[in-house]
Each structure stands twice: as structure tokens, then as C-alpha cells.
Image (cartoon, rainbow, N blue to C red; front, side, top):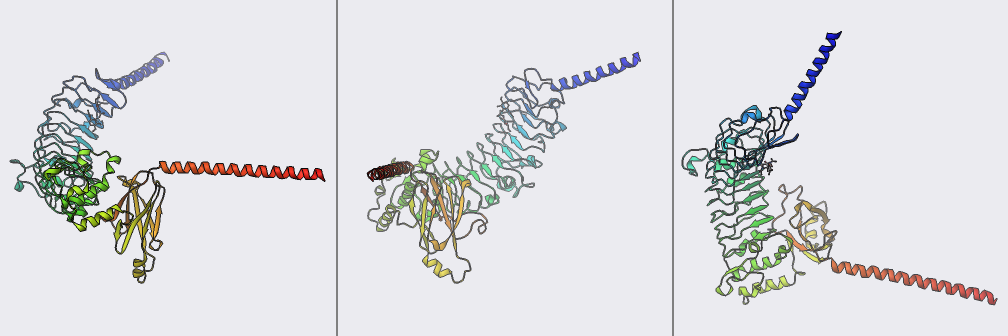
Length: 544
Ligand SMILES: *[C@@H]1O[C@H](CO)[C@@H](O)[C@H](O)[C@H]1NC(C)=O
Ligand SMILES: *[C@@H]1O[C@H](CO)[C@@H](O)[C@H](O)[C@H]1NC(C)=O
């Protein structure tokens, strides 16, 4: 009995001890670091080597940012199965070929190597990566094939590197004949955003760039790009945001951007463009500020009118009669300054010519300064602008749509339906409808759609916010089924700003007070009358 009992006690103690060691051992935190169940945070520590960590530390994230690491040789020290590794803001220059290949990194999702001294990326990335940050290093050549196995990659940061080429070919970068025509592997399926700004790219290298054709966001700003290949961007079907600001573009081929079905934001600011690119799609934001545009032909109305916001400030405009239509368009958009966080200098154009107008901003000069007084056609047009009530705002087939009445919370549309209904009704079974889409300016997500029978001739859109800019689009076809791209044609939309609420509120209050006063008056009258009657009756009874 005695020895048996001793043995069980001893073995139990041993079990407890091993448990303790495993638990506390696993939680052991490197000196000067902060640890919890999720993070081992060794940032801001002046560490020059990676400290020892228990391989079974449960941490999900390792943070070694802001230290003095120079190489990554003791990687084996890292606990397995962590999801995020932050090595940013160190002095890492050399990363061994197989540094990230071990089992330790099988589950790594985010790798941050921002702000180091890496000049050569020849190591293999873990294939689980979703976010790869290599900003602010000294990478002049990045071979896209390094991304070949990153099937999960969503975000790639290669900005601010002095990058000259994405091609894997040795030799002089950006030589057309050495660059492949298509992506050398299957284009990255999951890629969402690619940051290539702040580099020294001279061209969009066809093959490498096509590896990113599924991206929604592509920034190539602040490079040295001189021209855009005609068909290259057409493969970017999901691209919403394209930033080409601060490059050396002198010309954009007609219709180049028109075939990007999802594009919403396009910046070509601070290039050397002499004209507004022809064949622009309908965008939410178009930035052409600080180029070399002197005039815009009135044949390009369909390029500028559909844009929700266009920025053409900082161009050397020749403010003559030919440009008056742009000035008038600008006048109708001036309210945007109030509702949007736009840079005034990018938004308000300035005249560079003629001499008498040099330096004048368009928000202070009148239309007459553009010198069109003798031109009858233009003055007639101006008259119609002065009386917007009479101007058809959207013309569809035979139909002219007008904004008849704008209140704080409603807009009334009016159309003359006679012609069209009589013409069409013969061949069509169902009465035709018009489709009205309305959204607050810049907030397409809040779009409301409604359908109204053509024969009604008028419709009041209600429930709107006061003093808010709305984009109202009208069409004769149901966009949800008819038009696969879901886009309204460029000239089918108008902007309407609802009225200020105050007047209405005040009127409302007066009206309510009026009703209450009237109510009391009536009540009082009724009381007096009935009590008078009562008295009268009782006095009469007394007399009887
Ligand atoms: C690592 O620490 C730095 C500095 O404290 C912090 O800015 C950074 O966000 C951390 N990294 C991660 C991945 O949380
Ligand atoms: C490194 O990148 C991660 C995301 O990938 C981010 O959360 C972290 O804040 C970055 N580190 C620093 C110091 O900015």
C-alpha cells in the first residue's frame, strides 16, 4: 500500500509539473517584449537579433517593427503558425533565399517589410500571403514571377522603391522586345490593390502588369510613364480606381478608358496633357488638374458633362469664346465646392490667356469676359441657361424631361408624353415606362430606383434631404436587366440641389401655430356660445 500510494502521488506531481512547464514555458515572453495570447510585441526595442521564443508560443502576431535587425538568419526561432509578421522599420538588407519557406510560415497572411534596406527580392514568399508590404526599400527590379504561387494575395505594396522594372528579364529594363506579352503565369485571382506609386517606371510593361488585371485599385502615380499602350488596360475589367498622376503623359489615345467598365476614379493630374482625353467614360471623379490644357473643343461636351466631379484647375487656359461652354459648365458645378472636400486650386480654373485675364480665376470673372457678345448662337444659349425652368434637362428620343419644381425634400419631373406614346403604342403590348434613378451626389450606394408609366407625364420624387445635391438619371429601359454594365448613358443625368430647409420649417411652424390658435379660437367661441345659450335657457325657464 505505502509504496503504491507514494508512486501515484509522485506521478501526479510529475504530471502537474510538466503541465506547469508547458503552460508557463509557452507563455514565456522574450525580455523587453510585451506578450498576450494574440501578440508578441517586441517593437521599438533596439534589437539587432531576433530573441529566443518558445516554438509553441500561441501568438498570432509577431511584431519586430522599429528595431535594428539587419539580417534574418535566426528565423527558426519563430513560433510556428503565426498569421502576421511585422518586420518594418529595421535595417534588413539581406534575406536568405529560403528564409520564409519553412513550416514556421505555412500560415502567414501578412508580411510587413516596409522601410528596410532590401534591394534584391529573390527569396520565396510563403504561399499563404494575403498582404505583402515592401514599400520604402531600394528594390529597383522586382520580378513578378516571385508572386507566382501567391494565390491568396490581395494587397501588394511596392511603392517608394525607385523601381525601374517589373520584368524578370536581365539587362536594360523597359526594352520592349525583352518584355513578355502576357503575364508569365496565371494572373493573380484574388488581387485587389496594387501600389506602385513613387517609383521610376517609364512604361507599363505589358506582361507583368497583366498579372494584376483583376485589381480594383491600381496606383502608378509619381513614376516616369510617357505613354499608355492602347489595349493593355482593357483587360482590367474590375478596375475602379486608377491613379496616373505625376507622370509624363503627353497624350492619351481616344477611348482608352472608355472600355474600363468599372472605372469610377481616374487621376491624370500633373502630367503634360495638351487636351482632355477623348472618349471618357462616366466617372465619379476625374482629375485633369495641372496639365498643359489650353482649350477644350465643344465637340468634347460628352466627355466632360457626365463627370460627377471634374478637376481642371491649374491648366493654362486660353479664355476665349471657344471655351465659354466650359465656363458655363463650371458655373453649374460650382456648388460642388460646398459639398465636397475638393482642393480649390484643382477645382477652380484660371485663365493664362489672353493677357488681360491672366491669373483670373473662373469663380470671379463673368461670362462676358470670354468675349462672345457678338455671337448670336451663344447668347441665345445663354438666355436658355438663365431661364432653367424652360430648358429641357434630359432629352430621350422624342421626350424632353424638365425639372419643374425643387423643394427641400422633393423634386418634380415633368415630361411631355404625347408624341412618343402615340407613335409607339401600336406595336407594344405593355404601356411604356420610364425609369428614374436618383442618388445623393457621390453616394451611388444610396441609389433609389423607380419606374413610372410614360403616360403620367409627371412625377414627384419625395423623401429627399434638404440642401443636398442629387444626381437624377432617366432612361426608357430598365438598367437592371437591359444594360449589363448597369451604366446610364452619359447625357441622361442631371444634377439638382434641393432647397434649404429653414424657410420650409419656418412656414411649417407658422402654419402649425396658426392651426392651434384657430383651434383655440373655435373652442372658445363654442364655449361662450354654449354657455350663453345655457344662461339664456335657464333665465328663460326662470321667467316661465
Ligand atoms: C507593430 O508595432 C507598431 C509600433 O507599435 C505598430 O505601429 C504596428 O501597427 C504593429 N504591427 C501590427 C501588425 O500590429
Ligand atoms: C505592417 O503591416 C500591417 C498590415 O499588413 C499593419 O497592420 C501594420 O500596422 C504595419 N506596421 C507598421 C509599423 O505600420
